[in-house]
Length: 178
Image 1 (cartoon, rainbow, N blue to C red):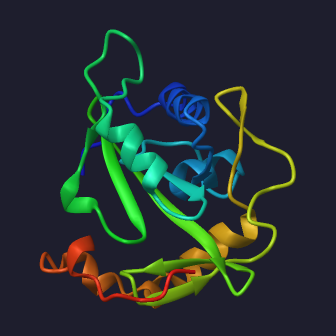
Image 2 (image 1 turned 120 degrees about the vertical axis):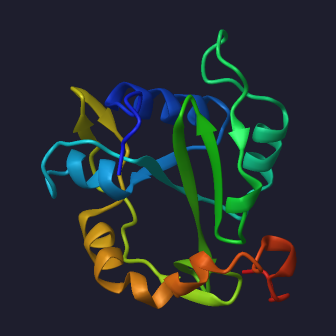
């Protein structure tokens, strides 16, 4: 597997800052979060994983539809329709994939509704109490308990569906909003 040369801690900070400025704050998740918390050694990363806490993706969808740019001289961020699911949105910045997972409340508990029908509950608190350090700068990061718990329980999210091209957001079953 090759990793994008532009996927650096600086790019992670720029993406987080851009989303924060658009009132779409996110927590760092996945490999970059594990690195920032010392759960894995520094190394190359294939993508940037984030978590958005909110009632849905309307704000992020509008942000991407408006041709938002990370930097003024860059092309607009490119939304990836093939990665548009009830629980996730994705876009490209430079040559790096950024995936954003949605965490909402279900009966007062933080959860992600994978594929529109599979609830995955997260531990509280969702985030580390203090930002982690990445590239010498602080970043808001998902809690250690949630990073480790997700790694241990990710099969509950039905990853076999990731390869099912027939399941898009439009085809997901109607479920009550939570």
